Image 1 (spheres, helix red, strand yellow):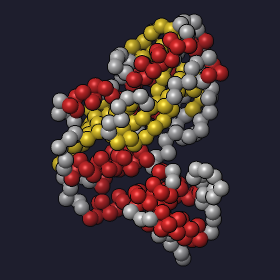
Image 2 (cartoon, helix red, strand yellow):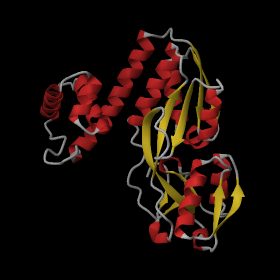
Image 3 (cartoon, helix red, strand yellow):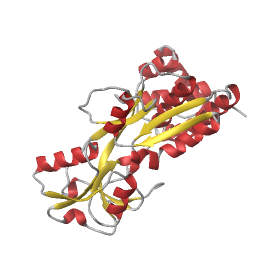
Image 4 (cartoon, helix red, strand yellow):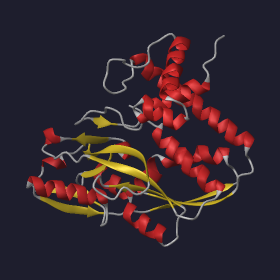
Length: 301
């Protein structure tokens, strides 16, 4: 039985995530020609072409997309096993701040796997608005902060994910057809609130705030109950909502960046491990796909 070398899979995944063989070479510490050779070796092992060779940007073939899913799972298990067996003595406390929507939807799975590999590390996770988290980090409250950033904001921190903003409404209501448009929002300084109000003002669309909550669960419940529409990052939308778009009369909102911030001059092995793990988890998650617009989306579809 033939085995797929994990070093080939790691180079393959780095090429996908970075978008080029040149950048992948920097990440794995090899030359570009060595990376190209590794990809050819991997294609020989699996007997399939993985990338479209004639594209200006790296694009996966159908076989490449299929292998990418297996590769990420294989590498995740490999890294988890090594972390658990090689260095079980890593210990300490890590204070992590993250936006409400990510602590409710995505981070539990990531942090659960981290905790299994590092049982002696105690995690303290706090939820708040991104700008509040960054301010609190400056006051020494957190070791690491995951924060959303506008595209125009100062590029501090390490970018770990970029995803679109989407309008959502209840699948059972048509509040987006009302005039003025009823909005469910969080209080300032919420980035979603700022982006949606700015876009509606530029469009000249009348709107009114009908529900205010600083809680992700509160906002989700209000939308599902049909009180109004709101905006969320694509990967954090709750089950049973309808995604709205320009064909529904709502403006495009672009994308937001998710960045990871470490407190300067505050580094332990536990903090470094979690920082690396979070960055790798988001990079390999493939969180947002083509869900379509104006559809009802449920997790797993």
